[in-house]
Length: 384
Image 1 (cartoon, one colour):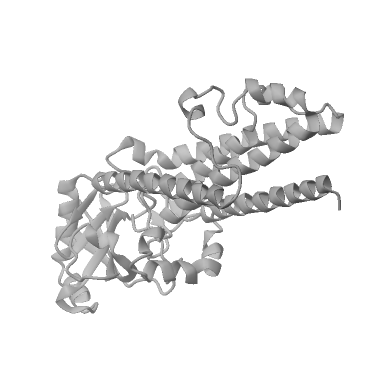
Image 2 (tube, helix red, strand yellow):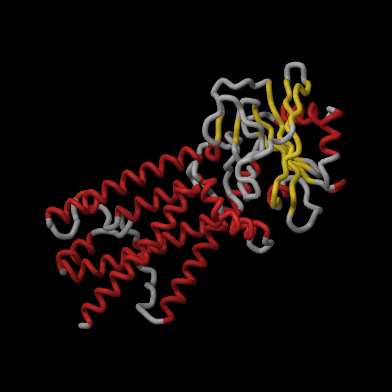
């Protein structure tokens, strides 16, 4: 086989290998952020459980932004899901626009695509997919997804380089002139970045340099995610004690939260249920406080009449009627963990009892057993 044909074949293999790689990651993001996540979990649950139960790897399955809660004390954190959805839509629309332009040029045989959106940047489709994937990362903010997202960005970059090399061979000076006047991914130049030393052209040094760059980028991203995680925990409407953490799904001031908890714990039957839940004096709890009309599938609770989908909150819910979902927390590592640290070290939640409270007379009005079946049973889901 001629040397040029071998090189072309190798280029095509590289193209499709990386293309399949990033398409699988994009599909994973979409699937995990969709209502079909429960089916995704049924396949990948064992792997997530392995990670979640491993002291060294458990952080990978944890989240760094709120997922279950509807409201926090930070407007930005409360709106991050809305921002995520907006980015997904914008990214998909921009991708379709870029793809339409590419196929128009191919069908009309106009040569290299250099007009329209391609007059601003050379790879608008990859930028669009990156925007879409970042939106999905906001919707499903786990560390393992963050690392996959970074790997995908690296894949986009090297795939873009492969495509540019092919275009230079196919279109010659015309494409090189176009390349010299545009940037790869941003509509403006970054002189400082352009002055940075490039990667080695080939050989082991190139792969070592790529790996080192990925590690540095990942460490920086994890550091940023850790900061977001601390911010998120501090922004929750929550109460903590030595043995329990109470998380409100909606905005409830601390005094009201305390009153709800005090009312529930003062009930003799609730006391008996908690005492008999197992684990002895060292038992730790993760408990959720939410309006009676609210339903969140990731929390083991009774069904709510009229609820549709995995999250349901009517706009005119009764703000005097709440429920507390008490869950025993199975911890990894040291059982001397207290307060908010319970959230960071829980392997599994075991539902104990559901207590409904009316704030008007400040009394427990109903005590329910945990549901016989719950969504995502024995599968690690976000805890807040």
